[in-house]
Length: 366
Figure 1 (spheres, rainbow, N blue to C red):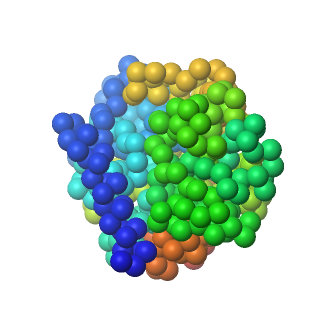
Figure 2 (figure 1 turned 30 degrees about the vertical axis):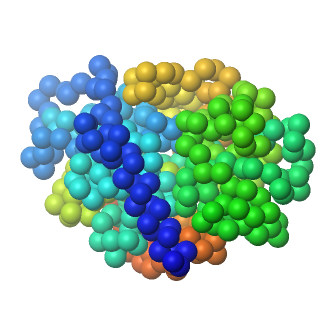
């Protein structure tokens, strides 16, 4: 079976597993409504909508959504239209939820956005804004790996076959001159696909020697005695690369542009507040994580994780194109046609109203 077909089949299996687990509550776990998200007196519904369904992950790289939920920014802009939330553990399940209409707008990483767009022939989603850059590190056992060259021959965890970090690690390994079979993960380095929730235990048990992972998993490994060997941002121009984008169902964008604009305005306001109030924002994100998952992050994980993430409205479109090229080189993706994956019209309208500079789509716009 060709690698690309196997990859698609693997994606389908991966997508199905979270759906089975979450069948009782739809495609994602429902996030709890927060007391701060009050509807202002006299507020009206936008586009006559009862609700806008927003999806995100319980990761600090999705802190714009976490803070926007916790502090009520989304509800404020949506007026009497209810901001409802669902949380996800993996990109494929969020894409499934978007395609089915279970959510309207979502925060998601670049690889699932690319896969969702290309698999639908460019008809399922649009990237309408940026959210975060950075927050990805190679953390290793310092007793086994003391330098970058020592990674050869070791077992390194990534979150999922073909996910954003998996592609990044495979590309980096290839640049070191090491050969790895993308599908099996076997080669000069062994890639062990492990859920972020399980990776710290795998590290403690010694079944992996390190991991290329997003925050807060990276800082959880450091708290267990791991050492940051490489920050992925050091590999990118200006140390910037997209880790989280905002996507929307194309039909929803066409039918309810005012609602989409309201969510984007809330996102811009949230990022502005996060960057102006980093300590308060960090606490708000952690409070929402606790509300969603039942467990807050300890300070020795939260503090270093938060410092490595940059919150931005710019989708950093040129880096998404590069990440797609990396997936193609790894044999995980046929060369995709990404023309039309972006529609930044409403975001730039919001930014102009805020007196901010417009952002670009690297020639991949509608």
